[in-house]
Image (cartoon, rainbow, N blue to C red):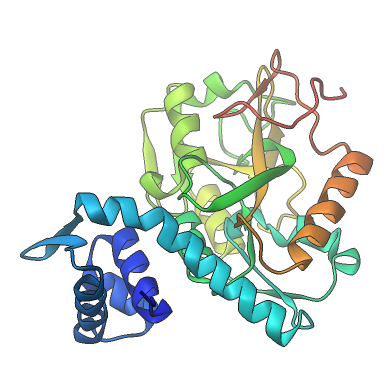
Length: 314
């Protein structure tokens, strides 16, 4: 039995979206074309892969069994193409978490990691879908489980997070602030919290009941909105260069210090060799710059790190 990879890709994308319309849009197909590919695949396999009911679809038991090896087949097909045509093309790396400036970290190793082509993914789900489709080779941002099967990731950097607020905020003059002291304020977020896992978990952990969202029009606009109301605050890694916004204050958070975790994500089981080069360069830079030092007695992470040092220098 010979599998058509275009049909397998259509199945995998539809299985991840559980929506034929969205899957078709992701693949640049009409919904009719995507449906035809899946129907032909089901006919070849002699079994239904989806249960279709109105606008909703769900995987059958056969579809659930087929999904993981189908992803592996796509990855193997791309590896075979790469082996045939050579590996001279640049490594395609996407990023997310743009308000927190992920490019700062990649810039530290860009000269040692070969030629990179950078993308601009919107969030973790969009870049993981692009990875599984083979549209990109690696991605960089904050990872929170569960990741789809077929992907690997490595923790690269832990960054202390500051509170950013306006000069009229009651805590603006403090040399440092405990996260719990922010509970009476309004956590200002560049989008809904269900799509901003770090801010969502911070608010839940430190008892901050009031949140509000803004349209993400860039860091300067976002911070100007924070300054505009003395009740508002937000969180940014301490090393992010701040734009010149009048009245803006950045105050360290302590007892505990929240840490923002950056990770590299790629397809497991082979791919562009530049992924290994980039991973090595990031690991070496992490060792030199002490990016992975972590002290659970004074630092806070939404999920414990796997490959971080036991302590962070003070």
